[in-house]
Amino acid sequence: MGACPLQSLTTKSSLSADQARLVDLLQVTNYGYIERLKFHDGEPVFEPPPRIIEKRKMGCDNGPRPEAGLTDFWLKRQIIELLDLISDIGDGELLTIEVRGGLPFLVELERPVPAAAKRHHDV
Image (cartoon, rainbow, N blue to C red; front, side):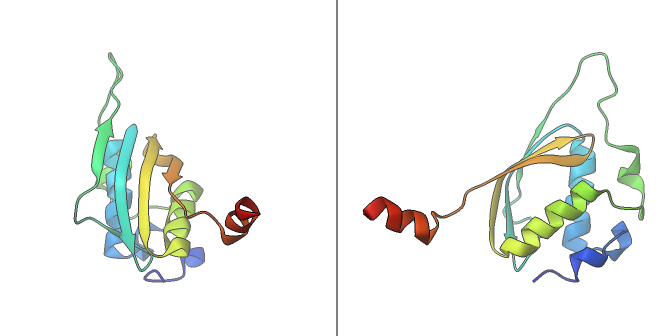
């Protein structure tokens, strides 16, 4: 579904433009939440834009990650897992991505009730 097979992605330069934009957004957010990120055909969509909630710790450097200005670097496992999730689902919306240190830490998504659970409830 995505622009290229995610298992082979190892660097930022190997990402599609929208995938790289999501990585940039994670790094600029650094600590906080990205809410209501939509995706289509396994790619992040930024229209409408997601909501960003930053966490700021008093007395500390709250700026973006140092990698935010780089055009290329090795991707961490957490970023590849997030991109794999988006690609595997294909179309939808991530309700919340919790960001810690510029990396996705927790993801909340809404899923339909599986058919097996519906049948069990109807019995």
